[in-house]
Length: 291
Image 1 (cartoon, rainbow, N blue to C red):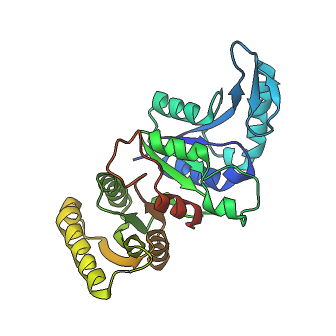
Image 2: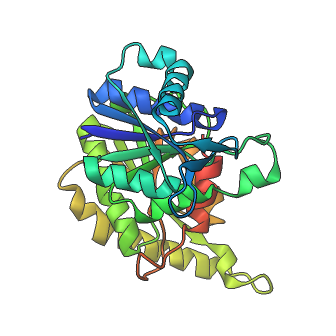
């Protein structure tokens, strides 16, 4: 299913967890892995300098600097590279543009990256609440699946047992469901189809009554049974569940309860032009908090 992978990294500690997943994917699927480091943003006009994305310092564009960066990358991922056929690629430009450009050029099946590369303490409020701008832009425009790893992950992708797919019945989330099902069938995992009834959508002054919530739960289950289950084509390793609450909280709770190895969600829920869509708030919070 995965023949070519792209791991986008700044070679900073914030990318370490994503690195382990990227190399694990390469090994388990015998895929080709491209490790991309975008060194920095070039100066205006015909400047022969660029601003290093990690240090913020101006550097000269020359072969010696490129080789030094590649050597540093080899040192950073030395142990992981020992049994790998990965290729290190460098580029100069806006990070998200270069990631997308290489992904399209190489026709990769998946992009792996961290939620952000900020260096502050992982307990900081901003770290917990805001995804990086590069990740947001890549997730918005990528033509393949984007896997975001924000915390240590020891899951083996060939031995997945439980895949959770969160749906809100939008067109985008249906596409996410089809991708999750394809992966579940490929590895023999159980697919958990989950919908969270958003009780916060009713407003703070007059929450929905229990009768209304139960009615909405029945309706959501009916939609799953009529729209999603027939697409499983007889695949019987699945469950379906509808809970009420704050969507990202319920998704994370459900994934923990079912011992989920992977959570699959669409980039956004709103039925608008994908070029205009921003990363959904529920997706962002799941990305930042999921284990």
